[in-house]
Amino acid sequence: MPISQTDTRIALNDKQIAENLGMSVAWVRKDRRTKRSIPFFRIGDCIRYDWDRVRQSLLAREEGGSQIKSRATGSTA
Image (cartoon, rainbow, N blue to C red; front, side, top):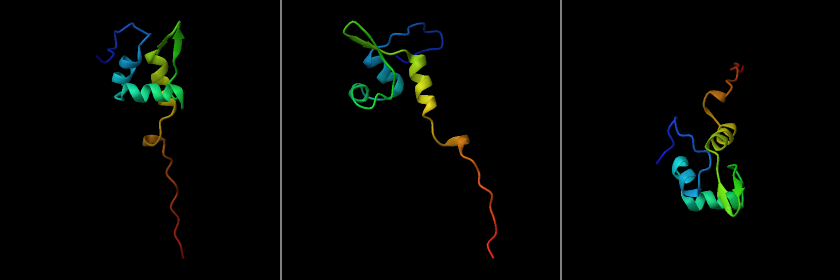
């Protein structure tokens, strides 16, 4: 179930974070072992994710869109 604006849970498991990202649980686990693109924390032997931190991390990696600078066009002779 995707996270709503009123949800107060901050400790999401692999399945919950994968669902909210639209990715597979296998992708989430592989990312944690290799790239570490999305932040996580440990509670004992459990891995948990804070959705706000994950979202901030992904937004910081955003590419394209309105961030693209237009370049001046010049005429060639």
